[in-house]
Image (tube, rainbow, N blue to C red):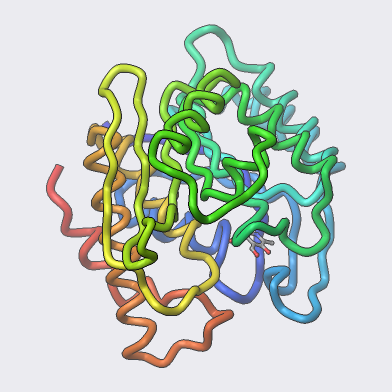
Length: 277
Ligand code: PXL
């Protein structure tokens, strides 16, 4: 049966991130997507300027209407939030679920390379932490994992220290955790640490790609969620989502995609649509 997934994230008009990434990727992976935009932006916030309209006040009637219509989903996925008020509305939405709630996946998109995204403050981090407490599966990068656990960000954590951070994240609530973008000691490779309370833990290592590009975290979490819903284990989904991101980064170089425009995943959609069950 086709799976239904509710996507709660911002809609950025330019720069390939959030809903404009999740919707096509999850549709290609054959999920039916229901959208709840938390903000609309002219473009993502890494550009020198952006116009943002916070839709916090629209979320309550949106949720109430879905509730009256009896809309049901297999999975709910949350991403970037622009304000603590959005976290409150999302928590109210979670409150409408009964005990057999949908799988909750949270990509706590709020920071990278040791810094919060422009316009976000500590109150938003606290709001994100409250969302994370309700999630089954989370996909923080190393900076976000540090913010959520109140560890100071460094690039040179040992594997043992990362495993301890994952344990701190598990204590917040989620039973599946993927910490992405962990530099290896020699800086040559990047690792993802994958922990699942039932399936166990795994370190996945891949060559470090020279140029950083925006929106790759959204590509990763979108593909991962689609594959988890298709029954892949967390480690299988992490490996395939990571391979897809690396293929997109190579394509971006080939196409000379401007750095702020993310990755041209549109050119590789066939690898997703043709994936076997
Ligand atoms: O890709 C994460 C992201 C999501 N949404 C907005 C952003 C960013 C990263 O900069 O600015 C609005």
